[in-house]
Image (tube, rainbow, N blue to C red):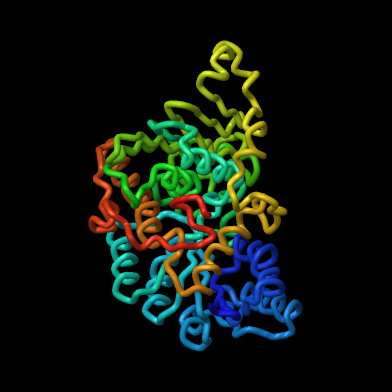
Amino acid sequence: MKEKVKFGLIGFGARGSDLLRDVLLPMAKDEGVELCGVCDLYEDRAAAAADKIEEATGVRPLCTTDYKEVIDKTDADAIIIMCAWEYHIPIAIDAMKAGKYVGMEVGGAYSIDDCWRLVNTSEETGMPCMILENCCYGNRELMVLSMVKRGLFGEISACEGGYCHDLRHEVSYGEENRHYRLRNYTHRNCDNYPTHELGPICKVLNINNGNRMLSLTSTASCAKGLHPYIVENRGADDKLANVEFCQGDVIKTVIRCYNGELITLTLDTTLPRAYSRRFTVRGTKASYWEDTDALFVDGKDNEKEWRPHEMWGTAAQYEKENAHPLWQNYEAHGGHGGMDYLVFSAFLEAVRAGTQTPIDVYDAASWMAITALSEQSIALGSAPQYIPDFTRGKWMNRTDMPDLRFRLDKLPE
């Protein structure tokens, strides 16, 4: 068991900067983590991160604009990737080849070949690669997972989720803020951010561990949301006012699983709306809906069939008795209601123990592949797309699940 774990950090846009402040610096103080190297394509961002680490720890990390220097010139045990989507897999591959654990922030893949390269490299090097899907460790997501594992939902038939977040400002001011979403929304049409909702659903449905996703279809609406926003906020003469964005305002993806379950995903990011991940689990004994935080139990709530508003907020009644062990007595901190700290704690636990991570490279490839496959389906008129089995058959009888406190395949003892 490693006492001291060293992290090399790559990428300090909004997400990387927030994680440094809310999770990584606290871990350096409280968890014995050393932040030994930082990198960003922009020198000012890298320098700012190095300054903050030096101020907090008294030690200045290696500071560079070349990520390979963090991999090759430090003795990092793990590389944390927090940069633009298109660099995640190439950096992860280089890090694993150098014998480093990889903790990779979320985002979709650009091709199925890239997903296979990620899996092949992890298998060939023996180095784990964990997609840092924080929503797998959300309070409600884990409460529902706990209830499902205990049989309280019965058999699961369908799940739904979404990334529903008004990103018009972030996309429209992407050039000024040096943000990667602008170029993606200009040139691509796909579910570009599926893992927040898909990750927790896959753990509920035992995907890659007794079940798998088989095929999908995706359909995109027209792209009308960004243009009026840009005209109103940047002016009719702004160069973005004449851009024809490829990204549809709303993307619907329907996934069929081996065990028969249906998964429906929604990407909704360029129209005015309130935030939601739409986490929904429908079972034969109970159902949960995130948007109203409602938990409907068969045989108990049936008389409220025609009074659905009385179900709003009822999940809170079940929280004390059914809280996941990770949330029992947990004082949430570290961003996004506490789940950021938990997902990094899960990664740190695996690095310390030298074991596989609780969200592994097969999860990463399967979840990220949805982006590339949705792009293909939309381009072909919502044509069905086959989802590869990145486990190469291991899903039928997994024997390599790590016995860790933060495991998600079953409840920790």
